[in-house]
Amino acid sequence: MWRVSPGIWGRASNPRPDVTNGTSPGPFRWHDAPRFENPELPGGIPVSIDLLRDRKSATAAALVTLTALVGTAHATENSQVRALLGAPSYEISTPQFPGVYLQTWYQHYEADKLRDADGNTPTRSLTIPGVGTLPLTVNGSIKADVFVPRITWVTEKIVMDGRLGFSAALPLVKQTNDFTLTTMLPAGLPPTAVAQINQQLSAAGGALSGTRSGLADPEIAAYIDWQQDESRVALGVAFNPPMGSYDASRAVNPGAGKYWTFKPLLVASRVWENGFAVGLRATYSINTRNDDTGVRSGQYLHADWSGTYNVNDQWKVGVQGYVLKQFTADRGGDAGANKVQALSAGPLIAYLAESGEWGVDFKVMKEFSVRNRPEGTITWLRLNYRLN
Image: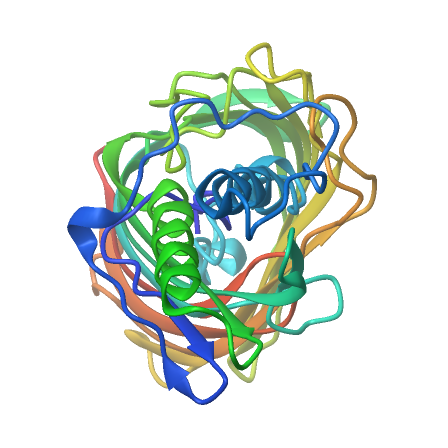
């Protein structure tokens, strides 16, 4: 997704805590949930406060610090990547003749699992004075709908025996993050303490979730395309200017941040007379520093691949997926040491009009081997049309 994706920790819709005192859920009331006005605490968790003497202030301080800790346990900034994951398809291995092409793409992404650096559900430790250190589990879901108008211009200009081309994509995103924090409290804790911790966990979940719609960061590319009867290779460069909707104080942002991303670009494909074809589109993202947070996100590879078979002149079927792999750690600000990773695969079906002027395809890809990101399913419905 266009990261769209997503940050992995977000602001929210309907967080419901599941705090258990021994064996029974603790009480919780929405209108009692406090809101934190100053979420920054120097020096870490303030363990010097006695919960039994001042339970409210001690618990609140610990949960405030927890919110900051959870918020920094990500890779790339908020686990967002500037990539239309799984977007390219059969056109990778289809001849691109000179002209202007309009693509209108729709993506739906849905994830109900979060993964840490080991591929497990993220956990943290919460220290509450007078209670002790508690295990904390972070659960949540992410949903995103993305509409992508894209235009490609394959020119008549020949450069180094290849054809010069340009493309631009402008993603529009609606994303919802919904997160909960759960723990297990020791038996015998006073009901008032259970209620207070419930309230603070709810407030922390509420500060990490939400819904936001707006423009994501566009992608602009220039490339040289060498095409032969059975193969195609294109080399170029793409970049993402920081034009998306973004506010560092928000937990959910369509835009990734106030920084630029530069991407060397490779497209390669091979077709055979028996109707089989394979294709690859890969970029390697290099990011500048986010002016609003001081974080410089690490470098990562994004590679879309496909294998198709021509059932006849109009219909294609096949499999498609992508590889997302971060190679360098984030630096500066509250950057964590974690790195994102995701693999995906799934079926695709495509129809190309007999005139060759338009085509439509549908594909679904399931993510696996995910690290430091949400894990879900991505669906694409795309229309490609040649304007001239």
